[in-house]
Length: 312
Image (tube, rainbow, N blue to C red; front, side, top):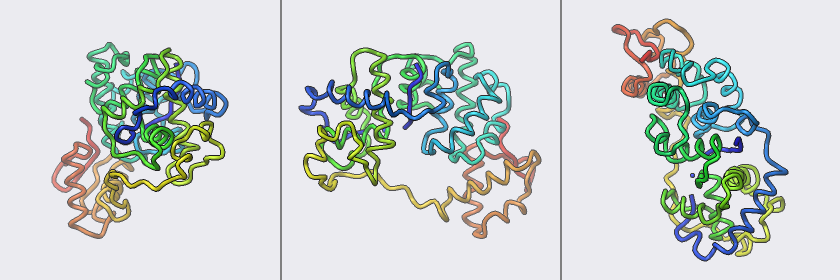
């Protein structure tokens, strides 16, 4: 079972009264997906559960186009959890390169170690077992259980939430995420048969990713345009609660952390404080970013004034 797109949920009462339309809606979206799904590595026959897990980690807040080449390199180097677990965590961080949010690399390495120690090197298929691994939340656990193992669970990501908010609730945007509400909304649309449910989970994500997009929805190409509540209502603007907007990347501590990490990844030798000083002119912000990397375990102080990637 290899059908997936990646990461999260609808508005208050989004599914109320919508159950009768559920099967027809699901069928239309899945039929469209069968004809229009992108050819992505994690959808191909024989793609491993470990590959699915790695792809889910990488796809968190990172575009598909940036993930694919890194994923292929990663799986060629570490085709099993045991392969990754056998190297220092710093090697995972180095290989993560420019994917962003490098803590994900540390978490993935920790999860690989746990898979080896607790599950004999086999990625577990039970949602609770997956949730017990470092760095795995509800979305990733359900995605692995569904797309790698064929179990029936609702899988809810940002694209899923947006499609449900528009098609079912008639609103331009979903409200801020709510685990229970989001899973209930998706469950109301989910086909009963596990394979069909897995296809629909992937299909509604795909629809949100390439047709029912956030800023420029391609309604003329949508397979459910005639059943869309938002379209029927005349595309009203969203007036409900909104999720907090992330601060700009340019000039942020995140940017400075990334520059320091790039410096540390560029060599297998410790980097001096003087070299780190060159990556950003604001000493206070630079020191704050470095302190954050040390606290997160992404960097270590090898000796006074010399830093390296964590090897934990």
